[in-house]
Length: 129
Image (cartoon, rainbow, N blue to C red; front, top):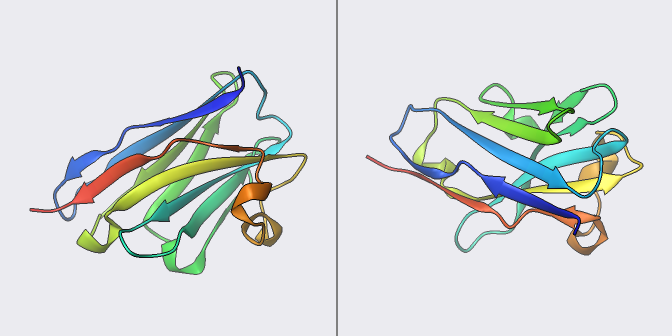
């Protein structure tokens, strides 16, 4: 069964780091755009950044630049989100999503949620002392 599985969330102190994973099964990431989103309580889901499975090109939402970094291991069909210098306002459920046949770019974040081919189940990140 084709699916995405998110993992790696948890409780971290302000200023700490955390790396999330997004593992694909049943399909390849080679010709896809894979992106990360987050949703804090009471807020709309917002984009973090994306990566192209074909060449590893990355793009980030402006407000996420500098602390969040996305990478991919094509052999393991896994995408990572490294988060540094975390702040309490980063507390949210983090999701990954895949759109096959697309590359990372502005178009990826203009899609409606139901248009993405796959979504991970989400992983909770809590930044608190």
